[in-house]
Length: 333
Image: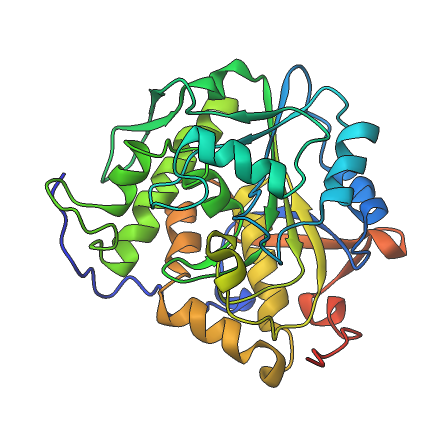
């Protein structure tokens, strides 16, 4: 479908305060414990529907990328909580360390993702999943191996993104499950163009979100979302060692069975930081109209942007985002 370059008035540059949101509330769990133990504990809170053959969708990073989720954390999670899981990835649309399957496999070795199976979902091609209710797509091309799995855990390094504003669970699935040749091209590029960034800001957010919807509709209730708010550069892990330096403080881990609630709570935690601590990341989110990811997820019925935030470090006490970050240590460089 041919696109317009600019879609004005959708509000993707504007943060919507909690009191202006409407609708039901979902549950989001939170821990400040940025460790393998913290990751395992919070996974237990959101894993009730995860069973059968489990895929863990993880951004494994470019070679020697400094900001990805630490490998020992993922190793402990998979060995202790999801022993038969496979990490799943797809090849990239851009030319780099993960453009072809053979390059991707070498990068996995360099980055140490060797402790459990890693399935490159589009190694044997792609398949189409339906997109229900979208305005850009009726179907999305994903890695052909995706439907080999019964359940999906979106284990996401939450951070900024050069064009998406931020990368949360929505980006992890929408871009990360789309295959490297067809699906990612559908999201990034208008037909007949060779410019992978010729899509207008808010349209890009919508295309990415429709891709995510195809994935979560496929898995239904057998999917869950964990966002790790650590080493949050304004750059994506796709940029590897070229990523901008981290200047945002580490916050913790947020998890939910509601993708919109997980990403919205993560955004709220960032915005709850002192202005001097979140300025760079907030500027990246707003200047790229990243909030359109959230509002479009809501329009598509993918979840709630209102939620109950439960602090698992303190007996599941209900807290606000501001309370969650009150003891965050400012980034010292």
